[in-house]
Length: 328
Image (cartoon, rainbow, N blue to C red; front, top):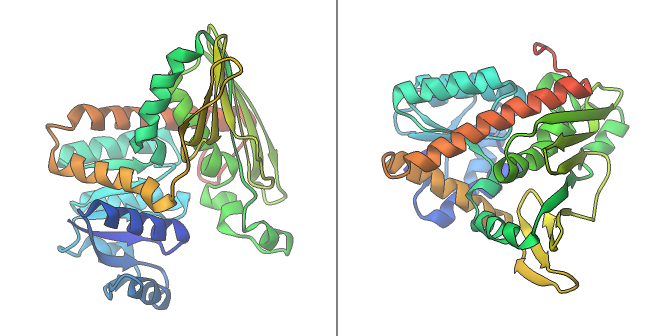
């Protein structure tokens, strides 16, 4: 299938390489605000068709699907435009800023017979099932801690007085939206929605949240979720039961997974390169498009989880005081 990308950042590079690994996709066009940057980026993949507006891209009949990797603030409007133009859409997380936007676009895609999917690696990786298979071995699960704290490469620019998109609330970014979503996804996927949420955040002078912590309360367990863009964690995440512990080195990639039954240790899953990790979501995107009947249950599960995550993220933002212009 012929597809296009919106954006020219490192994540787009990884996605293109991952899509190539599936053998199902052919890059047809690049969309960038800068034509020069778009041409330079496209030349790495032998692509010379470059658009400087999403409207131009949407009008290209050769493009069947689009990978959207623009700043969070633009996910909704760009995805809506593309869906209305008859394009399948794979949108980077968070799929939209608000759950109302997510639900609206899911309904729009369904009405048009299109696939509208969130690009979240963990849901499309084989190691997800490895985790699910390991959970019963932990016995009664009492608590868990999921963390994604990663010092942003843009932080030095912020300290110099610049305002990178990643620290600009107008772009609907911050630690929760960019990193915390990777903790919310597995929590809801593996344990369902909590009965109660408590949350707190700390803010930079720009108004963006630099760190956020949420506590998910279940009848039989407590889960703590932490994220930060101004500090680097090396401890990973873990799930504790009365018969064992599951340690996950990277919650975003589901790599470095180790089971500790008592004092023993067994490696369940090692590390993998980013393109390999992103090939899973790219392959499922293709499968959902080409075999809608055979993959209906998988697609519906992914869509329901996206909406549940969006609703939960909004609750965390409300409780912790995270605000974006144009969003309550």
